[in-house]
Image 1 (cartoon, rainbow, N blue to C red):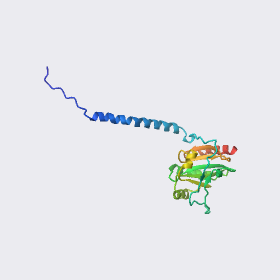
Image 2 (cartoon, one colour):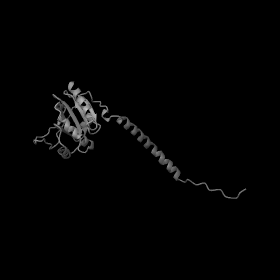
Image 3 (cartoon, rainbow, N blue to C red):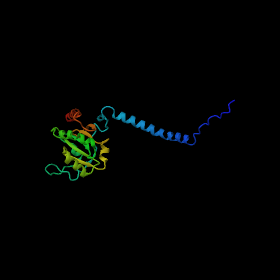
Length: 204
């Protein structure tokens, strides 16, 4: 029988239960992160502009937004705000939700400048959670395609419209009914399909 002493078993000490405890705390976080990733994948799979809107086919919400303070047109005339009544008339209204702090809004702005030349529609702006001076600077730098711009500084009207974020663009029929909603920036590639929706709205 050997008298050689056996190697001592390492003592894990208090660190082992601490590590287990930390892992247990991480489990709910990992589950939440996985569910959030799954939800985002479901929402944004394919074309994000096809996110559903409960308001499509319904009248625009009752609202009245003041103009962006100090915003003026090329001849120095004040640019009006927008309201429920101003979205009705003899033309289809394209209502673009934008903000000066929104990077994708800068990407889509050249498309809006081209869209404003289309005589079959009128293009209005919906300035979301912005400061008047920043909104004026943005339009002064990139051009103002809008015939009217309403200032939604609190974001309350955007909630009533079901806005997910900026930019978003609504097609509103002559009777004030929301006919279509495009989520995300309007791009040259998306423009032909968007104009088809404008034509459909004009036919109703």
